Amino acid sequence: DAKTTQPPSMDCAEGRAANLPCNHSTISGNEYVYWYRQIHSQGPQYIIHGLKNNETNEMASLIITEDRKSSTLILPHATLRDTAVYYCIVRVYRDDKIIFGKGTRLHILP
Amino acid sequence: DVKVTQSSRYLVKRTGEKVFLECVQDMDHENMFWYRQDPGLGLRLIYFSYDVKMKEKGDIPEGYSVSREKKERFSLILESASTNQTSMYLCASTGDTNTEAFFGQGTRLTVV
Image (cartoon, rainbow over all chains, first blue to last red):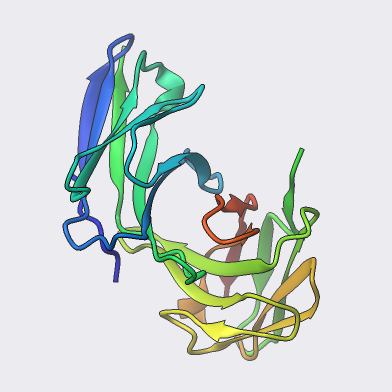
């Protein structure tokens, strides 16, 4: 079973920051948080991952709470092309299984 | 560019046929995965492999088998296709532990 909980859907206005929450209250100390997204009819695409520090790359920022029980993916200036299902995944250290939950369907509104 | 390639984008097979779905990666990754994706059910792990000739069952292995004879290739086999195996099938690979997964474009299989 997936170890994360995400809202099923969210809306965000184009040009605004999209903040996608994820709850992973049972995360272990050596588990990483990964985010992927899936645009319609394509395979999932990696976005970002982190252990306990906040991370930023060209696509997004990842904010992990100090207790590591939740995280937020931030898309700083959402565009229509960011419309997708976003998956938050906790990856068990040294276990190669990747288990997806239901994700959050993000709608970007023009 | 790194690539995970699935042999077919669309496939139509008859009930009872033996079906092979092929996946090839060019990143020298150790780990490979097969998922199926259905509306309302998300991505579900069928099988994965962490080395040549090694395989592990995922959450829904029934009705499927896999083969990993070479590091770059991971095949999903439907021994006797049934209509409830109509789905989108996605292959993925990862390298060392905790690196990101790369996915293929998917194979939409219809069993009639």
